[in-house]
Image (cartoon, rainbow, N blue to C red; front, top):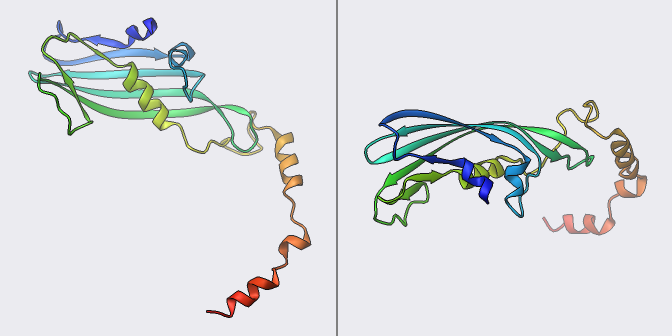
Length: 173
């Protein structure tokens, strides 16, 4: 968790206005999270922070690739991510329980940790179903696996015939 300290912004000394921070997100970042979906990454994160009197507005721009496994051919390939998210942090000692979209910063806090937000944004952006972009034609796609799948999923005449019990049920319409 010590390496995640690199993903924080000390905002107390910053003047009001816009500020830009750049972070590198690599495999070491995801090693800090025990059950991470992502294991390999080469991402750049740009955080544009707008400091105001009562709040911070953080715009996250995360671009790059993560290591993904194709759900069809099981080949490893780089999945391209392009993420833009915004987060608001308010300075207040009152607890905001109704709104999950606003981070509450106490008057005594001097930095904001971004590692959890970055981790969440990346994991939410990972596609639920991952597939090689151009099936069978990319250098990552496993053509042998696709050939085995097509051979094993070939249809025969028995599968195409309709069970007569279904015909009897159609009469009930």
